[in-house]
Image (tube, rainbow, N blue to C red; front, side, top):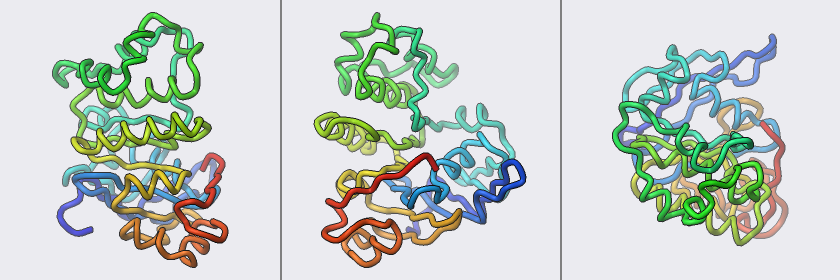
Length: 248
């Protein structure tokens, strides 16, 4: 990836409780489309995302559209146009769907794009008064992604958006991310390699808190030996192999 990246991470290091989690991660997110962040269990994917957002102590360089953000608090990073759908979805169970979305409205970011969110997720409009805690896992994921689409973000970070979802819902979520990526670049942490194959042009693979691969997604997934070595997938096409991980 060469043309100026929207997000450029250099030598990202994270130390938590005296333990080194990231040892100089480097990655880039293109100014368009989907970049996938992959790796085995405990490779450091979620920690990398949290490091980019400033949710954990970090050092190194995190350039957002050429602007250094590594010293900024999380709220300042978000205000610069970063939407985040966390792995645990971050839903407020005791609030309604409408209230969950309203909380995501960012002051000074223009009018929230409810028409887009409701077009992509008509169920959220139909269930606006329903408590979010009573939604299915797939519906809660719709809320999480919908929140990132409300504001005029420059980057969306989606951490395991299809994890634990039924195949039909996985397809729906992938379709939404595909459409969202037409307008906003996406950094996608994903365990389903078929989804990665469908959505991602570029990918980054982490191993033991370090960058092990950066390059075209189809090149990695088309190389069965490389996919086995870097991702731990079994025999057969990498796009069909299971890729199950715990929180990293």
